[in-house]
Length: 490
Ligand SMILES: Cc1cc2nc3c(=O)[nH]c(=O)nc-3n(C[C@H](O)[C@H](O)[C@H](O)COP(=O)(O)O)c2cc1C
Image (cartoon, rainbow, N blue to C red; front, side, top):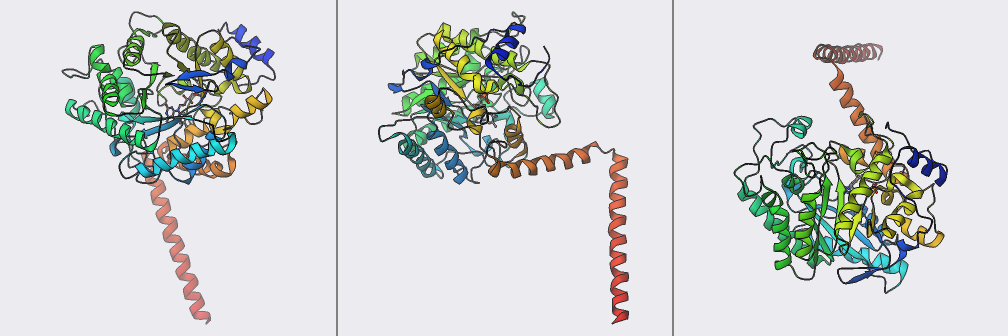
């Protein structure tokens, strides 16, 4: 099933393609269920919509939110979703994915409090004094993808020949020791305390996308460790940390965004098994969900894949990152995978709301797929990522008009991911052009230069250096001749 870009003029064309591909992506004619209330953590949400976590990479050097961060969350608050799931926020400096990732610490806590207040206030301004948003903060350590100073500084929990090779991590690179993981648990607790003080309703102990806790879940090859090998050990960090937050932090709920599958062959990924041909096995995910539900998590969010390795898995797209190949998979296969795996977990836990993802590629037709998922008990809540960058008020538009404006939807062009990968500030390059187009051009130009340099052979690089030196010397000489001539003429 080869890749294809989105070219569906109407729903019938999309349905035809889904049928031709033999996929299970039912579309509903009635989207009213998306505006039906649901109770989460004792609060009644007026609709099923969540703004998914999206790293904006626009914090200051200390990790405090900037004007751009405030702008993003106020726009989300005025967009009409019932819940905003704030982006990945580091619990300590060495776990930042880039030098502008948010970092929650004593130093930045007041700024986070202000961000929460202004976000709630923006929502009330638009929807009235009784409008109540549920705000969740995603807490993270970026693990092997840490770049706190802009250069890779991986913190790895196990050797993973596939991802290590991709990242150029040598075979003798040290693993984070158990005692450091013990103290990292405490960093999560401290950050959760600060999140509660800042006014968040919940914290997400992030366990997806190959970051530290996600990698621990797959650390079959971490030997002689409390955190590696058997499932209880691999799940220890997530379960213990959640339990400690529950015991030590009052007034906040705990949840997690977990990878259902990493999309790596067993034994290098979570959610894969030698017993299944498809490499998908949700048995450990279900045990984890049972553990987290038992300790009081009122909802769980699912994601898929490792963006650095298989970005199409978690976020089906039209165009890849610059210089990368298109996957040999139709984006609708990715959408169907998200739906199927979310449904499997939701069916196993009918009373635990599960958040589904991966809908942005469907553009204006996503509500029909989302409504069908909720109607048939395959998801309780629907989170939108890239669409929210592009069209932050999509829930409100949908409530007012009953449909989305196709001129405002996400084009799944991967430019936002490119900004994140390239160290830029992140937003929608197409729909928020005045802020992000220049940022994108900068990243693209830098990439083109570094690609041109790396594509040159050593001999070419040497001769180029020589010719640059020669040109510089020639220029200097010409300048000298001109100056001499001018002196003589004067
Ligand atoms: C630029 C960018 C930043 C993201 N940042 C986060 C993040 O901080 N935390 C997270 O769990 N997921 C993050 N995601 C994943 C999204 O939340 C979402 O799961 C994914 O984009 C698929 O949903 P969509 O099809 O609606 O975009 C990010 C995705 C993109 C493209």
